Amino acid sequence: MKEWLESWFGQLLLRRAPQDDPLSVPALAAALLLYVLTDQAQALAGSSWLVASAMTLLDSMIMVLFSSLVLVIAGKTGRYVQTLTALAGTGALLGMVGLPLVTLATNASQSGGPAGVLVIGWLLLLIWSITVQAHIFRHALSTSFGIGLMISGLHAVLAITLLEYLFPRAVA
Image (tube, rainbow, N blue to C red; front, side, top):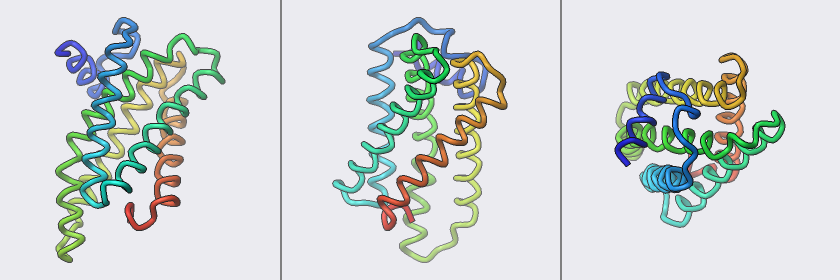
């Protein structure tokens, strides 16, 4: 587990790539579990257990299906396990960093307190997340960072749009 965490942290810093790690189904399972747990914790900060679970399921499905579709279209399906492991592992770590922001933002929203700094923090975390995903997709597709950035941006827009559309009161 220590090696996986070190690898995901290295990918957060754009120093490692998904192919630097061996293909590992246990690493994928661990990454997905951490991702789901972190996503659920964030969703629970502002939603009921049922709504948070539905949001987590949708978000996880989007990541799994989107990355699969991108790799199928590019003809790189052999890289799926490593790519999804990297996306889920780094997503879980970023989710842990973002959890205090989500909690503080929810509290500020409920109490009518100032949330400007929290919005800036969330925006910076979103940019970092998209950058990390772009790095992962660039390596998974053997393409430029710009193409990876477009793909990760598309993923972010798709996920945010679907979550806001299906759970407008929970996301707002």
